[in-house]
Image (cartoon, rainbow, N blue to C red; front, side, top):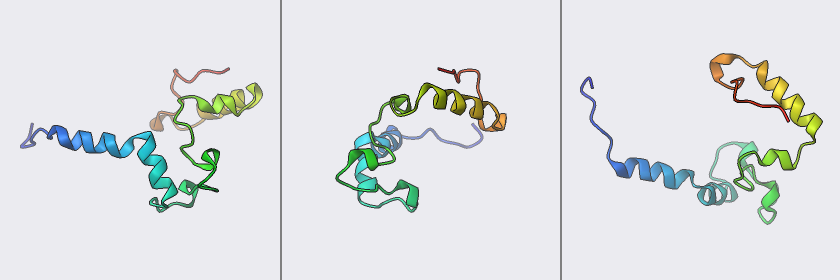
Length: 92
């Protein structure tokens, strides 16, 4: 392992705890992120958070089928080095 040591389990647990949906929302509400896009428009409105529901694929509840197809096609045009246009990306 070229002099590397295995990470302790607590390191991974800390990362998991930090990334938990509830914690991310709490941090967003507190203005902990140094990015305007990660600031809720209204802390009393869960829909105004960047991480507002924690539902994988939740965008489908907001975008029309036409908009979903457009997004899928746009993702296919991105540089493959970033992994956004994988074959797993499916159209509606």
